[in-house]
Image 1 (cartoon, rainbow, N blue to C red):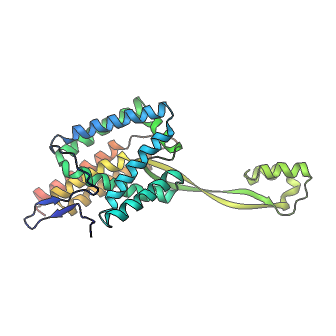
Image 2 (image 1 turned 120 degrees about the horizontal axis):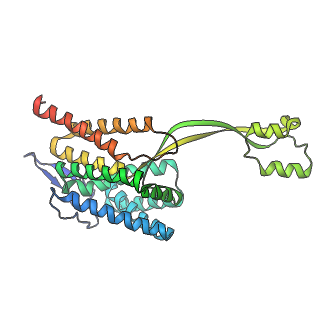
Image 3 (image 1 turned 45 degrees about the vertical axis):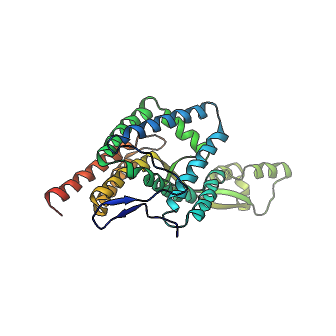
Length: 304
């Protein structure tokens, strides 16, 4: 079998890293300064993305994201299945994600995409470097959302083009009555045509207009979910930090980071208001560092 576990702990306690599939090589960087190159890459990617948005280059944007989605998904899938099957499945899901997206495909693929990114970057970054990266990106995220606001422009454009890298999080649902048809039409031809053109009108508004025709209305209940979006960087960066904790302190310690970063994100979602954009990274970073503080207490003071 040619699928791999990217992290393997030797009997001596040291960690070895398997090669990535398809002859992909990890960047050869010193762990202590790798955050500089990662941040520069993020800035370059953002500039290119803004250029594509400015020129409305939808095709090249989708091509870029298709290649990125395919690459990350195939690396993630290869941890479980052979490389050839992983690549084929990645291509299918990346095309599905872009051409005909839905809530389930979007979220499921996103979970694997960031696992692929972590498999590439965690081996070349340590806790110190990952911590500085979180701090720098948190400051950048705050400026990008509240000051320059280009992150809002990017998020809106990506969503409109069905290439949004991130999660859709439903947080409430609303039920409404909509008109689907007339059970026993008694309207004249002209009125009937108007009715057919307004089948999506709210039931209450429709009944007020056609009070004497209520018995002829056929309705159904539609459930609409209010959706919050969480950007891909808000998932990938804490995952990379968690990966450095995993390789340095072990599985239990990394789980502590997951718990605290999730609580921090939950606080932001609970406190946020509808139709407003918030920089999530400052909150998630605070959660990561709170979890790391607990890890240090457990390891160094309690000697657990």
